[in-house]
Image (cartoon, rainbow, N blue to C red):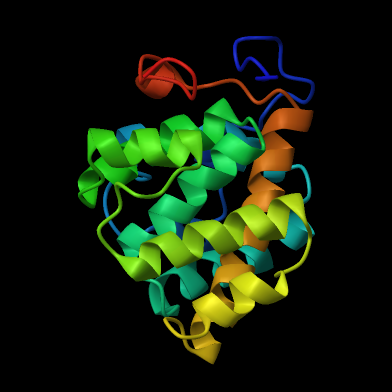
Length: 196
């Protein structure tokens, strides 16, 4: 079941023009351009601003780890897009569709991420990260057979970082789905999870 993003938001977002300057400076460090300017996820940030004491530290953790983790930005985007699919979050999917395009995700790869069949992805690392993402969400564990296959491809840091990334997007996906965060007009026309 897909949660529609055009329903009334359960919590009205605070205008991001009221972001603290130190938070705006953190967001300027996000890799790539897809989540900046016109493509900024204003409504989810505005929703999270209702808890200001946790937002700043989370933003710093989120952006710093995105910049420093062992997964490339493209690998991160594939995992994040899959999280959008697994949590049926059109908000996550549509915002990261733009970023995925920026970092070279092709139509066939978007389809693979949607369908959960990763043969179209040329990289063993990318396939491993997506299989791990599926296991973390669906099984809350890494089954032994997946662990054995993936540890031949990934190192310890990769495992720690993919779990970190998945956990960050559990927060974003649940926030968007549970609070019915509305899509911004700038991304509303991007093909959705079931539309492409």
